[in-house]
Length: 102
Image 1 (tube, one colour):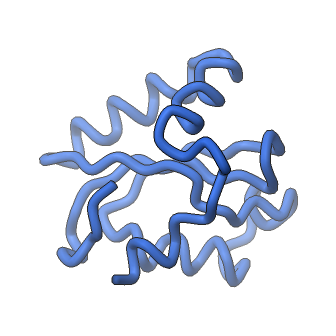
Image 2: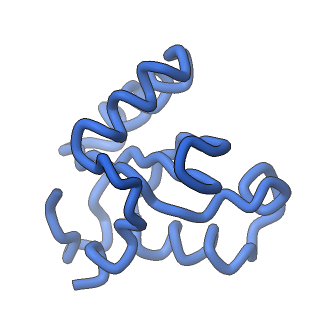
């Protein structure tokens, strides 16, 4: 994975409640800020309700349009495909949030 220094970097991400737990797919132009919002529960909704706060996967994009297309595609995937995507780069389901803060 790549550290994110540019705040306006389109990105698709997956959050989890725990290893093999509830998953959430999202898109943003500011990953650090958006994950902080999920972690602090400042935005009401699915992630707050189900305590989905662990950043387990993310993918940088050149444009917001491509990020949104990828997010929509992943949201239509079977759960098993999402698990394989996460485990291909993060087999221990580590929280990647500290990595993007560097």
